[in-house]
Image (cartoon, rainbow over the protein chains, first blue to last red):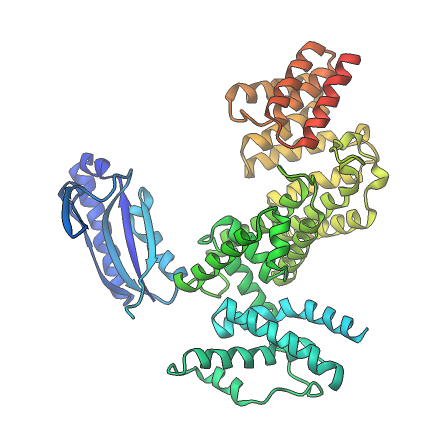
Length: 116
Length: 414
């Protein structure tokens, strides 16, 4: 089954982080990505630019409404994702628990709905 | 007569074979429908052609055939896997054929137990699902036990089953490194069911014995499926020991009777004896844990002929150990009450005053109620009355309110 692993964290804390520590986190992510690839379960993924770069679009009554920012203000923001292919939720949760940001942020795991 | 007997067997064997059926068919609802169909079929066929030697195996085989048939009907384009294909090719077994018992029936139920208690499901859904699939309760029975409208329970079950299927919660026993955590989750579900039955916080009935009995059944099942697990045995012992005191816990008009005032002749020896035996076995395994400690506390009460002859020093020490596993204000309150009995009301009161000042139990009526009780014993009547009034402001359950009002009134007369 395919799952998306959504990585939420406190963007403000990230922005305040000293450079050396940021390098450390990136190192952990590089290692994690390699592990996913070696296990043959990685289907995709990326870090996202901060929510200050986000733009939200809605079409209401045929009219396009464009607003600055993410669709909702939350305490933790979506900062990246992985797409993985594993046998079941248990395996997906095992991988999710190993995401470096699981230590301070929250990782949401959702199965992909197959296109019908 | 025969029909009654058959119905009983079907009710007993049904839940036992459901687990394997769910896994084989990969669908809760389909498995339940297929089993229902097989049970109906049994009531048609068995009276005429005789009871199969292994009724469970017969039900499982017939249900599998029905389930696979239905799968095929729903999705004629999708190829079934070989094992399922085979099921369909075989004819409905005659009750006289001796069928092999599906091997490792226990393994299937163990897998189902872990699925039902999976942390990815909402807590209320876990208990409902366990009662539905492992105890074989109907949706209506569960809704009655939890005092909620039947559609609410039904909806909860539908959502949980859908999540299991769609999120891909696997039918497997957790890996060894996950097992301790997941086992704790299973035991928590069982204990939640028990507590819901034992000390209802709202609604009319103070005790709902049906749920206690189901929880004990689940507890026995866990012990049977995971032999040698000390904490599972500890939980079973704890429930047995509590349940044995049930008849003495409320007076005729439904108000709760505190432990020290209970008529110990109403305690059921049989339950106490079994609880003590199970607890001894657990402790001998040398793997202590919070359920065993709580059961050990309950055991000291159960063994004591009266409150004044209870070994409060040991109970107080056990609470100290329990606090290391379950640190929290409610366990602390119990520890403080035990300390009061072991070393005098002043010591317990001092601890309760610290707890009260911390604000961690604001709104929890049992803290001022316990303080009131100790103040009363110390003859500090005015302070006791004030504490009872604080408790009365927070109490929710009518039976407990009546009890506190009685205590307050007795104080004025005293």
